Image 1 (cartoon, one colour):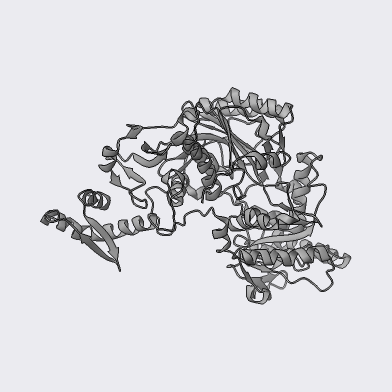
Image 2 (cartoon, rainbow, N blue to C red; image 1 turned 30 degrees about the vertical axis):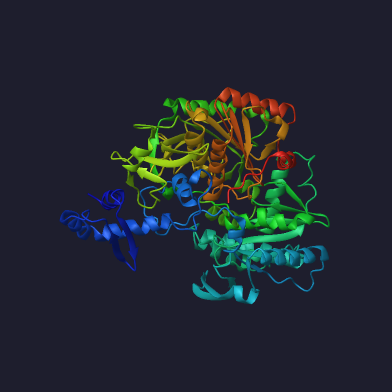
Amino acid sequence: MNASEIVTNLMQQGVDIWVDNDQLNIRSPKGIITPEIQANLIAYKTEILAFMREMRIAEDPACLPLIQGLNLQTIGCLIGGFIGQTLVDYKPPIIDPKMMAQKLTVTFKPVPTSYKNQEILKFRQELENQLREYGVKIIPWNQATTELRYDIVLPIINRKKSFQFRGIISEINAIIDVEIPPSCTKKVGILAAETWYKFYSSFILKNREMSVVKIAKFSSWAEDHAAKYIQDPTNTQVIVLTEIDHNFINPIIPYKQKINIGLNTLIRTFSEIVIGVAPDKISILNMNLSDSIFAKSELGEFVLKSLIPKIFVPIAPLLLNRFKLGQYQPEKSSYAKKLVKLGQELASTGLFPPGFKLGEVIKRKSHRDIVNVIVNGRTGVSYGFVAYAEPPQYFGALEVTSTEWESLSAVAGFSSNELRQNEQGRRYLKTQIKGEDVFKQIPDIWLVSSRSGSNKTNLNIASDVMRIGLKEKLYLELPQDIHTDLVDIKPSYDIYVMLAISLAAALYAPELIKDGAPIVHFHGYPAFDWFKPNEYCVGVHNPSVPCGTYESGVFNFLGISSLANQPTTNVSLVGLIEPDHGTNFIAHDLEYLVERLKTGCAEGQIELGGKHFASLKAKVEKTEFN
């Protein structure tokens, strides 16, 4: 007997149970509460109170039902592997940018009186006004900063020295600055600061790890960029306004060249987001390296649909402590072999530029060390991923009837109107397909994926392919013979997206994934006319949340699930558009996907960069998820 069973049994008999001021309240028809049940209620009172609190969290009115009758709480827990875990501190993903805006706090770094770029100064004021209009809290600089202190031990004389500085408080989500090219004097100071940091790091700390804050303070005292003032870069993003880079937004310049332009811009400005400003247009750049362009007249949409989501959900890798770790033998996996073949077959398309080593791009040691901390020890970065979903794993009935659903038990942390489980622990989801309630088993999801930073078109099956699982929690299986202390093998930033696509396909487009399915992502878009019958395009009008977030997974889940209410048959391929990021594709067959992508590239209908995004935005019907 447990809390779930007691509550479920009583609810099925028409008993109302609720918690009020930490008191368990019961309203029951006559004769239901027997002495035995009363004894169980007393014995399990603590567990029942905890269970009911989590039920209340799941049924919070803030988690409004979405299409297919599911709320964000449920979807976020499913794709994040939070089933069966306490949800008291869990926060549902937010996908409405207006709600995101109301939770953001931003400050503007004062502009020196010597700064004379009137175009950027005008835009800076317009940006501040627009952020306020959407509900973003703008904090004055003097209120956003506080006096901080850090200590270092001076070499040779072995004396501790304390330094005072003003730092941005951690509650600030973003600091907005303008780019000011350094003078000759400052360049000399930067060189001196970097030399001092190298000496201190190598000979005093002997290459022991430092916090991001300390690295920044040691190495940037001669500079005046916004990052210098940040107390905790994991909480506060730097946004820099600068003159637009016409090469970066030039549709004629190949995207591979734009990668270097974009990276150098981010590193030069030491920022997470760079907004380029011109008299008639604006651009936005982050580590997704999208070459997105907006007309000045679209400032409102730019701020709401592009900038606010990037501030609200910054790019961050999924840490290894989120997974239950294990091992597997990739050479014995037919899906690992298919994944390697998928990458090789797509080499000729040019959709997967080779990755790069951070050390080759970031020249200053202090900058490399800071990035190393932020990206969780990754030594390289690449753009795009390839994955292969295994067939979903079911145990028992794939669906149950409404009568059978009523006999199932509630699950802690979830609304009993959405998720229940049977005696064997298999969980069933109440959802809607073509307007009808359907009660579907949630399968175990497994897929193989390229590791972060690998060459997607030439994967080494022994060291580049990891296996990801989604059951009651997240699972990560690494190649059996790999030595993680010698090889930089980290999961992709897009794990939530891969799992969300696979789970949604199993629930809403089972024919697409029943035999396994290839999934790819690249930083470009197909033209609208490229799609054939039985091929679908969704997500074009979504807010541009970055990769690596619950929100990105939720949008992909909703994109697949939206097909359940359309007159679709024999879905062959789905293109899931991620604005300011790229496109995810899932198809029912490897050869089919490869042929379609190759044909699209050969005919100029699929390209890296944002060239074809405008045609999609103009012709794809908007689907509202909020």
